[in-house]
Structure formats: structure tokens, C-alpha cells
Length: 428
Length: 125
Image 1 (spheres, each protein chain N blue to C red):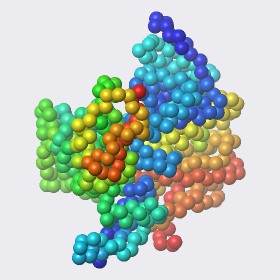
Image 2 (cartoon, rainbow over the protein chains, first blue to last red):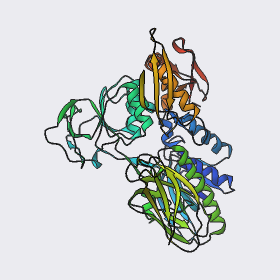
Image 3 (cartoon, rainbow over the protein chains, first blue to last red):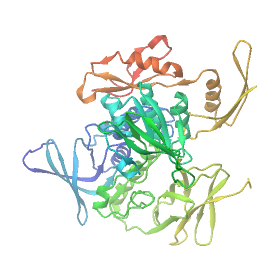
């Protein structure tokens, strides 16, 4: 492509994919495979998103039935994107997106110049962000040495720096657990992982292989209260909490450390979606979508962790594939959707999709998390007007583990749906 | 008879909880008597191996001479004893990648005499 450095370069395409992590790569691939002209836009210098720094293995078990490392998983998609000749703009930042009557105009910039990209449909694959120390109740100083787990992972795996030698980890999210192991292998000492809740928020297998393998202590119902240190962090005060999450007076303990790592959750990244008035679900913090990953704004699709935070990359790719093929179908016929609300009661933390396009395909891939841990057999029910259908039974359900059910929606009329988890006390 | 309850299987995200009963003979070798709670053959094999000698895949990074790609992700092409992870990583710190490399290429054959190879998990082009 001829790039003029002094003017804005205008490009026309059918579909623009924002973000080249696993969701964006899958979306671009499936859009291209379905015959559309597609452009991929990525802010970083390489394709692959967060997978580049996730050097541990365990990716791809669902999609490939293989245990791959993050870079290996990404590389498979990157090679496909290259063989399909999908134009990928790296080091490119989207400044603004404007909605026109029948298209979207993206104003982008990179080291070669400015671009005005006009697309008929937009696929948001912008991933998620980490919650920071500003978003949790942490008192005291803000010296150097406080990092989010993903940032620490970037330091170690991409840049080759160790963020500390005597490390406290707050929160038991998966990235924090993975980093506890990674930092131990690189010679740091993990003083402990402190989780405010009575149960860990990461996967059980990560507790086993990241903490237990290296005898790293996990303190439940215990959290960091105060940070100490002027220039560099010198220590933290930890405190036990009761069942209601209230601090137990007198249980405070001072712990010496030179680094504090936060693994306290992820939030979908939706700055661009919000600028386009895409409605956001307060439960997932991502856009409301129908079963085709179509947001409530016609022509804007979303996939991956920008919709809700996944446990497994395999499902991130899956949602990208759905978004890609749906976007192509939509730009080809621009059929008006007939959306019905798919809600849940308070037994469910959140679920996807929150809407069902009544006239579209009836095969619905449902993803959900339960609100609490169900350790007795329970059934996940779909409630329609007058009927209750059991979609699937589970022996155990945990909020930390996302479940997937594929079902055929026998939609008789324009009737709202509701999802519910029902506990069957030892009936099975 | 020794019993291990709730051994979390790490083969897949399901995380099955496995119970194993075994006996330790006079020469300290372990004989497995029963395994339950697994839901696939891989899980049963994992539990057996976990009692005899835990094995893990090693994943780490190696220094490179490329400014834009300062670390190369690498892995072992088979599982190695858990106790050998740190010694192998220490050994890999002595290596610097100075040429382009593609994923799957062998970097170190049989590190510390182990029956495994360290291979690139990413490309440097």
C-alpha cells in the first residue's frame, strides 16, 4: 500500500477488527473465510495480544486437544492470518470511531501516518484491563514496587526483568497464581498469596500446579490492608476478615516485602464501544450481545474478553469465530433483528448472550457463571412463558469456572427467556 | 496404607479431585492400591505418576540479542521431574539467542542429562 506521510490515507473495507489478540485473530480469520474484505488493527508491535506473554502451557485443550503455550497458540492463528493475506496494521492506534448512516469511520494513526478507514461493520476485540490498586481498598503509601500481575508478567516474560525478590501477592486470580510460580522459578521468594474471599478465585488446577508444587502459602479470608515504604515498598500489613468481609480487629500482621503484586480481577475494555453508545451489561461490564455476538448497535460486533472475562482462550477464539461469520452475514443482508431479552435470576452471576435474535439461528451457545458455589447436584434451567426446561445438570458449579451449554432454542413466539440455577438436594 | 484425598488433576481445566491409596514397602518404593475420582485415562495416569514422581512441562524464556524481542519463550518437548525445573532454568540463563529462530526448533538437547529437549515456543524473525 502506498502511504503518503502528509495526508490522511483513506481505506475502504467491509469489516474492521479492532485488536489482534486471540479474539480479533479468530474474528478476522472467520470473516475472511466467509468471503469478506477485512482489516485488522493492533495497538502493539506484534500480533497475538496477551498470549505473547503467557508463556505457560495449557492453552488449546478444547480447540486442538493439545497443551500449547500462549505464544504457540497465537502463532497458529497468526500464520493463518498471514496465509489469508488479511492486512494487519500493527503499532496502530484508533483515535476515534464515527458512526455514519451505513458505515463506520475509524480515525487511526501509526508511525507511517494517519488513516481514515471506512468499514460497514466493526468487530470489537479489545480485550480487558486489570483492576489496579486504585480499585481496591488499600491504605497507606504508594511507593515503587506495586504492580498488577499482568504488568509483572510483561516485565518477566517480555522484557526480562524481575520486579522484586520478596513478593506478596494480593488476590488469587489465575494470573496471580501463574506469576507466583513464574517468579519462584526465576528466583524470587513469594511470601504468600492473600485472598480476601473464603475461597480462591483462580482455577483449582492453578492452585495445585502453581502454589502447591512450590509450597507457596495461600491465606484465605485475609487481605492486605496497608502499604508501607516511602520510595520503595518495604512491607505490608495484612489482616484477617470475617464471613461478611469485615476486618477482624487485632489480627493485623506486618510482613516485610519489596514488591506487591495485584491479581484482583479483570474488566472488559470498552472505551470505543461506549463512545459509540453500545449498551454495557453491568454484570459482565461488556456490551450486551445476541447469540451472534452482535451488540445492540447494528453493525457493531464484540468478542473475547471485551464481552466478558473468560477462563480459557479456546472460548475467546470461539466467540471471535462467531463474531466474524455473523458480521459477514449481517453486511450481506442487513436484515432487521428481532431481539428478545434473555435474562437470569439471582442464582446466576452473569451469562452470555443477554439477547436472542428471534429470527436468526436457534442454536445458542450459552456461557455462564453461578453466583455462588453449588456443591450439590443442581440443574440449569431455561424458563419460558409457562415452561421450565432443564438444559443441563451439574455436580458442582463455581463462580470461578465458566460453564458452557449449547442448546436449541425452540422459540414459539416472541417470548422472553430466563436462566436459573436450581439446587436439587440429593435427589440424584 | 497411605491415602491422598482430593488430589486436583491438572491435565485439563475440569480439575477432577482424585483419591489414591498406596502402600510404601520396606525399600521405600510405592505400590498403588486404588485410584478413584478421575474421569479420563489421562487423569488416572496423572494420579499414578504424581505418587511415583511428579512430572511437569517446563516453560520459561531465554535471553536474546534482539532489542525488539528481548526474551524468547521456550518449553521442554516432554515433561520433566518437578524437582528439575529450577536447575534447568538456572542452566538456561547461560544461553543467549543470537539468530532468527522459529517455533519448534531445538535449542538445547538433553539439558542436565534429562531425556528432554528445550525447544523454541515462538518465532524470532
